[in-house]
Image (cartoon, rainbow, N blue to C red):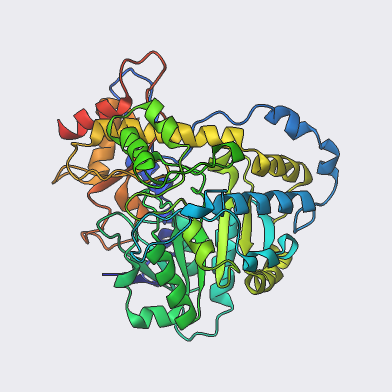
Length: 482
C-alpha cells in the first residue's frame, strides 16, 4: 500500500532532504571500504550513459562565443523551440504504417503509432508550450514547488513512485506537502491503482517516469488512460519525467525516426527480433530489433500513449533532457513541454526565479534535438547492453528484464541487504552499485524499506575494459550468489 510522508520537526530538515541524496548516503556507506580487486572499478552506481557524445561537439561549443556576452531569452530561441517540437513529434508519431495503426480492444495488445499527429495537435504552439531548462532536475524542482505552492487544495498531496529520483520527493516536502509514495507492481511499474480515493482527491500532481527509474518498466496504454482519467476527475496535473524516452523502447525494440525505416510488420517479425535481442544477448539481434515499431505484451513505444490519448497535452508537463539522448550529462540542458494553460501559468514563476540557458548552450541543444544518427546509435548501444545483461542474469533469482532505459532493479540474496551487497561488490569485485534503500523514503531506524533487498545497477558498459574476456556483470553475479 502507498505510504505517506511529511517533514517532521523531530529531525533537521537537511537530514530529511539533503540527507536523502542517495549518492551522499552511498559515499557515507563506503567510508573506509576499499576494493581488493586490482581490476578497474566499474562505476555502476550513477546513471551516466558512458557513451561518447556526438562528433563535432567542440566545434558546436565554439560557434557562438559572442553569446556568452549577452543575457539569453528565457523562452529560448525559435530554432531551439522548433527543434524540440520536431523531436517531440517524431517521438510520438514516428511515421509507421497507417494501416497498422489500430488499437485492439484489449488494452495490453500491441499498438503501432499513427503516421501523422491528430488534428488537435496542429494547434500546438512551440512559442507558448516549450521552454529550455537547465537540466531535468531544475525543471522538476520548479514545477513541483509551483504546483504545490499555487494549489487551493486544503491538504495537498504529491504522488511519487517508490523507489524514486530524489528531487521528486524533496521539492514537495519543502512546501510542507504530503508525499504519497506509490509501490511498484510485479512488473516493476508504479501501482497507481493502489492509491486511495482520498489521496487522489488531495493530489496536486502525480509523477510518471516511463521508462521508469530504476526498474526500466514502460507504461502501458491503460496506465496512461487511468492517470488521465484521475487527473480529470480530481483536478491535478501529471508530470511526465521523460528523461529516458530516447533509451529505446521495449526489450530492445525501438521506433525509427528516419523515413527509410518506416516499414512495420506488427507481430511476429518484430517480436522475434526483440526476443532474439533479449534471450540470446546478441548485439546483432539488438541492432536488428532497433528497426521495428511495435510493442511487446502491451507496452507501447516510449511515451506514445499519453500524447495519443491527450494530443492537446492538457493537465500534462513533459520534462526531457539531452543527458541520455545525446550522452551529454554535463551539458545540463533540456526542455519543458506542456499544455497551453499549464505552461502559461507556470511561466510566471519561471520568469521570476528560474535560470536561463546560455546562448551558446541553446545553439548546441538545438543541434542535438535535431540530430538523429548519434541518438539512434545510443539506443542501439543501450539495447546491446540490456541484451548482454539478460543473457547473464536470466537465471538469477528474482531478476526482471528491464523493458527500456539502462538500469537493473536487482534483488539481492536474502538475508543480505542492499547496503551489504553494495559493500561486498566494491570490496570483492570492484563494482560500485547503489543500495535500493537510498532511492526510497526515509524510515525510522529498524523500519523496513521496499528498497532494502535491492540494488540499482546502471548498465554503463558491458566490459570493464576492451581487453577483458567477459562482462563485469558475470563478476557481479558470482559475487552476489557466492
